Length: 347
Image (cartoon, rainbow, N blue to C red; front, side, top):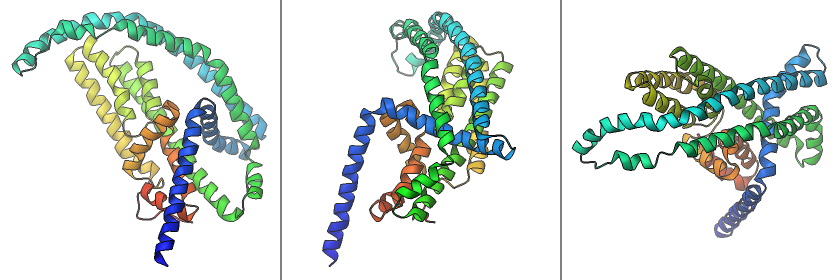
């Protein structure tokens, strides 16, 4: 009797994997529609605790949502205006990078020759094209100016999601064959995602402000842009904070010299160690239930499937998938592989 059982279980796993391939292929094709919806959903998850807190203060839900949306819109308008000015200034500065790079590369050339590395500075400079960066930044500014319509539709979706949130549990219960188990799983996923997103947003915001303050205190140009970059990329696990440090460090090395460059590198190391290795693990705890390898692989997978938004939301998306897989016997084995423990947690 064991062989038929093994065959049946294997068949179930193959069928589930085939269904996942079909689902992911559909998501990839429809990513232009799905990505804004997923982003709106996670924004609603972040804002819903604030709405509930305002309701405890005797504020009507519709008024609380309206107040939050107005604050978000005003903040985004001010942010985009300041960011557009900074990006314009950065675009005008880019041609100076090429000429400023020649002197340090010339000084490095004899050392590279002594180390047996035959490098021609003139050949290297051919590959450094500030015009390409200027085109990219100009396009980015244009996209920012054209993004207000998309942002308006995104916020409108968030508003309707927040308005629908109180009625959603009753609707979901009526759709489920096992309402108690199903709602418990949904609540666990919602609690885990909310816990992660709220804390990650707070930590990313503080990280961005600290980076901005550090660079501004050192007199580094475009400190606000690099602080905003640190805030955004801090959502990307493992490598986001490293990627955020590369542009400002390169700028300081080119324009300010090695000494100030080392100071900026040391500052980033202290900030990333403090927030990434000490504060964030203590605040997050071990409630996510994902192994470190899975977190890194999920970054690659969701980035491929959904683009940059998928990279930013890779951890909460993987949490949702893991909890969904735990709800049936066929998917529980995959959930074990995703977990940081020997068995997935069950309620």
